[in-house]
Amino acid sequence: MASDSVKYMPVHGGGGATTASSADIKSLLAAVKPRKASAFAYVSVLAFVAFTVFLAFSPSRNTSSPWFANIFSSGDPHGGDGGGSSAAGRYRSQFSSIFSYAFPNATWSQPSNRSSGAISSRPGSNFSDPIAKNGNFSSTTSSFAGSVPKNETLQSPDTDNLGPVAKNSTFGSLATNQTNPVAKNSTDKSLNGSSNHSWSDQTRETPSNPKNGTVIAPNSGKEQASKTNQTAVPPPKSAVTAAPPEKQSNKSSDSGSLVKEEIVRWKDSLKNCDFFDGEWVKDESYPLYKPGSCNLIDEQFNCILNGRPDKDFQKLRWKPKKCDLPRLNGSHLLEMIRGRRLVFVGDSLNRNMWESLVCILRGSVKDQSNVFEANGRHHFRGEADYSFVFRDYNCTVEFYVSPFLVQEWEVVDKNGTKKETLRLDLVGRSSDQYKGADIIVFNTGHWWTHEKTSKGEDYYQEGSHVYDELNVLEAFRKALTTWSRWVDKNVNPNKSLVFFRGYSASHFSGGQWNSGGACDSETEPIKNQTYLTPYPPKMQVLERVLKGMKTSVTYLNITRMSDYRKDGHPSIYRKQKLSEEERRSPLRYQDCSHWCLPGVPDSWNEILYAELLVKLDKLENTRRKP
Image (cartoon, rainbow, N blue to C red; front, top):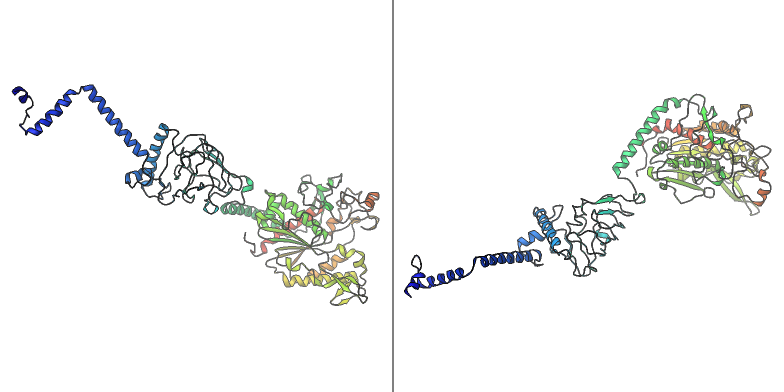
């Protein structure tokens, strides 16, 4: 007994109870072997680690612990959550990668009580996609933290909550490289985001049922898609409505510089040149546009389409004797009339010239869908006015039907019957529509050669008075005087340029247009000046009226240069479908007044272009703003 008591005595002589406890512990430890002690220690450490991991990856949804909040709350990638957000994002990314590797089929829920930019979960709510409305996401082919379960359809947000990428964008599969094609009608050209993680910086919750689950994403105003390993495909051409203002202004300034160079190059040589004294020369680089390339040409002028076999008449260019005409550059002319209205007013010969210019200009525009008739018309013979819009240049090229430049009228005679008259004292009805135009090209002439106007019996009217008989030249003078007074009163010469195109010669042989006149055998121009017709008396009247005007009007005296071109008319190639009577006598019905296109009116427009190079800079800057 005494020996046992001595064995368990405390070394320093402590109390009895303490001595007994210590002795018991020592005896217990002494009883445990070294191997069992090591195994017990390892098990304890593993249990602690497992418990810690469980708490780390399955925190309480409503936890208030700052430690948990810092690790598991989503940080705003753009700094919306302050300085700690980036650190939190790094911790979350590391833990999520480990967890997804260890438990590949598990899903991870994040707390919804984020700071600014977070969208809380709602029962039955749709996925709020910051990129596009109606964006359909196909199944994911790569595993990543917070991934969307296979075959899950992500619904779109409300229209009002859309971010910078437009509606109706369709996105392809979320593959490893995250290549998202931007679909039709999308206006954004690129997507932003982070590496190897789809929507890594957005709060999303996956439900317990992965097939039918919905995912809530934050508002796209602050958060966008991942950047690295994502390739954004640009939208199709049809989706791009306009270039950015900076690019547009750069393009405009570049084009404007080229136009200035063109003006400097040509202005001095053209200033004192007589454009109308010259000759037709063969030029293999003509015509200015390929035959058949302009579907805007009326059937009446489309000779090649109507079966005309010879084409040499399209290879002639007008060459003044004392200068060279610049080749009409459609891009330069469009830049010159940017923000302006160019208007043709007159008869069907001015329509001939108008269609020629529209085809030349349209052919120089890259996107021809941006060139259209304002009212959607495709035929130009039945209405009183037409306007082609060149949207990229904010300009229009218009035509107003007014064959006499004064009004056609009706009166009731003593017997109560109506009869047509021509009001020599009233300018055409459409005048209010074009009086503010920047460039106006007038003409009249052919309708004054018809039987009714030539005879002048009971046809011409001033006020309430109808002349029993009036000479056609006097009537023509009165009509032009009415027109000239209107121009002087309504056109501001500081803001508008006015042109008057002269009479275009006809080449009927053996009769007139309604009496068997023909020109179908003509394939070459007149080369001997002695065969040209005398200068028309009506154009002499016109010159006298123009000299008496206050407003400066440029006279485009194309009569002589056109008279050479007996080969340029449609003749029998004026239409495709002939009536029964026309088939029986095809040579009887010919057009030797109008011109085939491409053809002579293209040269009229080249002279107009030369005149504008010289005179357009005199106008005040009155361009319309886009």
